[in-house]
Image 1 (cartoon, one colour):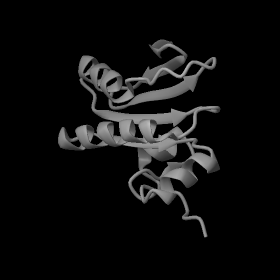
Image 2 (cartoon, one colour):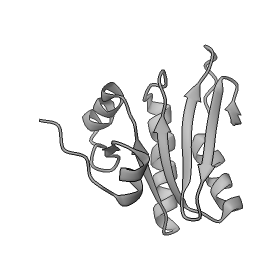
Image 3 (tube, rainbow, N blue to C red):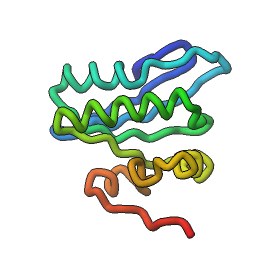
Length: 124
């Protein structure tokens, strides 16, 4: 468990090719977590630029958090890596779709699907 900022924790696991991260909000603090920089630093230490991020309830897709995802996604792509999301609530993924980011950040059903790149079915 890695404390990201006051009230935020990351559960981190990794394989030889991927870093798996579950972000959790604990408590009611409103400190904004430096997600992109923290994950990138972790990736540099492990020499891995491929991330699977699972967003646990009650984390909400705020504009700040979405901005952090975009920063990490761009940086990973520039370095030949990737960022994939899994396990988002329907509400959180709906926010991404409404912002036009549903194709960039598809909601994979599981870590395994995210690793394999299996695309989830599109909502109707």
